[in-house]
Length: 324
Image (cartoon, rainbow, N blue to C red; front, side):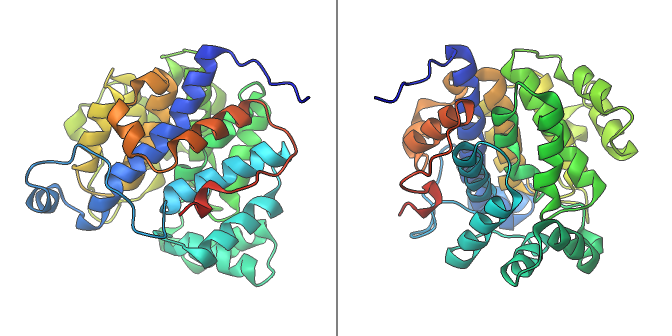
């Protein structure tokens, strides 16, 4: 009989909170993302947005949640990061669904589908779409790496940048993923002063724009957050700044995600990334019970978080992204 690993209850709750918070934030914010402005969202949802909307039939997750869960499944099943395995899962999902994919990500995955090596595809995608090269496409999916490698900081940083490079080779994207996952890792261990630790570890590595954004979160007001900067919605540095701000200012997961889902800009992604960070801070108990009931595939996502903490090289009988 196979032994069942005994998980530390607090660590397990925080790890589950990361994945559930990410998917809940995405599911809450996805319906408003195409509306772009808070004014348009208020007009479309005059009573506000408080609950998770059911996803379209045949498409349980858009790209934020789907690619994160596929990355998590690969890490849990393979045990290590395998770029070819991860990229193959993403390509398969793109062909089956692909809801929400951004231009840079789609370009890279199309190149991989045609036989280009994953990291070469990310470089070529950056060159083909250099004006959008620092989008948040790699940031919104990277959180499973923090859970899988929470005990090995060097590997956490390396794999965070590697998974990003498959589609987003810009250095701002690479180090934004490392910063987010370092923050999640610190919160998994209960360190609410995570910003100082992340800045310390990345001080001589990360781009100046990213370091400055992380320093700002400690002193700026909520009204100053770069949520709807003209021409810069989806900028990866802004997304890190927004998520870090909510995780350092004692906002509950529910209040933060409801605010972001109605604030305009990249609502689905801002809420997903912030949800992952706040899920790490408050654990699964910080997620409203009604959202757990409304969230697509929540029992499987919880099991997947546990598997990331105790990975085994065995393939799951089904993929969460294939659930209908």
